[in-house]
Image 1 (cartoon, rainbow, N blue to C red):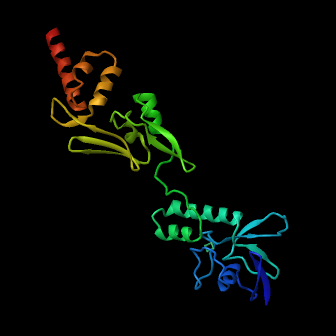
Image 2: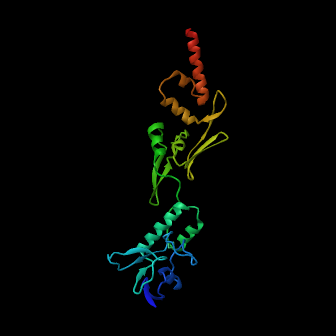
Image 3: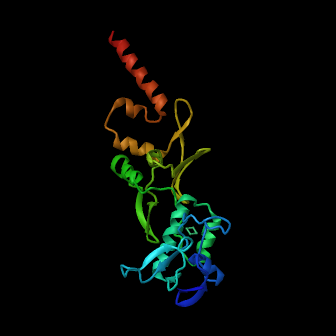
Length: 253
Ligand code: FES
């Protein structure tokens, strides 16, 4: 028989047992996911981290209790700030790979670990914010800190419904939904803008929002074709423009 200490309490153990087995035999709670009593431990999920005190460096070391063998006199902590940090990191890592896992979220809750907000699919590249401000102009998006994390959020009333943010987003986390004659642009549950859609005067297709068309009218340089054709969808505008061109060429002949 050997003796090890977990969180200040001394426990007897058989030679060859792991720290996790000793903890489980004595009702000391340590989270695990990849451990199965019928299989050899693999140390994959890293949830079972414990702090080992009094190592050669004198610094506390975090080790995986499912693979750490119990040795006579070994002292570990299965709780405390260092262990909580290690558990939190492991939980977040797992949830990055399996954000839908109710089991992991519940396990974190049971062990008092905040797994953090679920991933939202946004990689924080800010392309949407930059294109809206630098190219299109309205500046309808900004970053906002929520619970220590930065999120892309809309600025109320600024969106003109062009959809450039959704088109440039590399992870498709910004959505455009054109339903009947209404366009809704959203990120997560936040509505960036909701706009009526206008019909093309040429083909009748719903194609753009009035705010976007008004914006274009102010932003584009004076060009007779563009101004004359701004109530046409891109296809009809092109046809319209080509037709004017050919009429001009024809009359020059
Ligand atoms: Fe998964 Fe130890 S139980 S690493």
